[in-house]
Image (cartoon, rainbow over all chains, first blue to last red; front, side):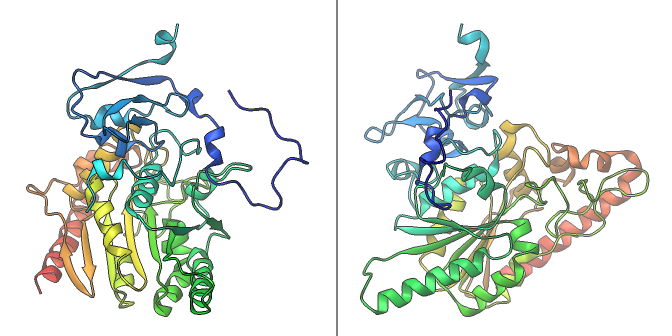
Length: 99
Length: 306
């Protein structure tokens, strides 16, 4: 899942890091449970989006509607499912579902 | 105050791929605080979980200029950055409005960074300092800090045959900051997004040093179910263990009065660090803590009246 490690010649100078570069590091493989969005029940209140520690809820910036999850980053904490007032997010076993 | 529909249109300044625990409250606080600030800003972190997990070499989760120096001097480092900015602005070399945001944990704020925090507040730098208070040194192995509540079991105040967790009550840092006569001091939680984002927006509108103390649940050190991060922080407000209030120009205003003040045990029972406290043998200690919470809440109510 991780990209190939850079050699010392390619590393940034000193301790200066590229802004937002953590996007290259995927934390999705930490997960044991994964959230599944149920669009029929969703009222797009965005409570899941604002509560996610990993910015892993996909919201369309134009329509303001929830469209799913960034599974590359979601760590499966389940806060989104807990905060959802309409039970529109279900936590399922990640392994079973991905078969 | 911006709505969620407005916030969602803004660019994320604290992005995915950081290595905070699943369900970590600090990730939520960092996102809410950075989303609430519309203008460009420069961030500075004291050493702590947030700094360690967000900038593991060669990656950074910060989409803004960000600097880390040490545990004790986030406020001092950012003071220098802010002073340099003011100088450059006076010389006409910068014409942009830039804000300054410092993050520290309770270790880097209540304990180790207190003198640099106090200095920056006294000098009146235009900085918003946000303390992500998770009530112990979670980053180094859950040692007690001066923000750790009475009876919490940590690795340096363990509960056992001799002691029942931490002996002392926590320090009231918000009051210490109020005593610096700064324009804005507030407490908040991630569990109420509109409370936190509203306070951040208000804080950065003042021309001076501002401070927000955010109770930030730690699923590893408290420990609790990761899905309950938001709920546990709300329960701290409902039990008045962590009252939500703001102090504007020295005047207290309570932001949230729970309709029904819940017993403190409701908050304790969701966290394993308080397991021993709920045993029958510790009834007296529990009553002592309830009495202290009640006393502090009454005092706060009185301060907000006057």
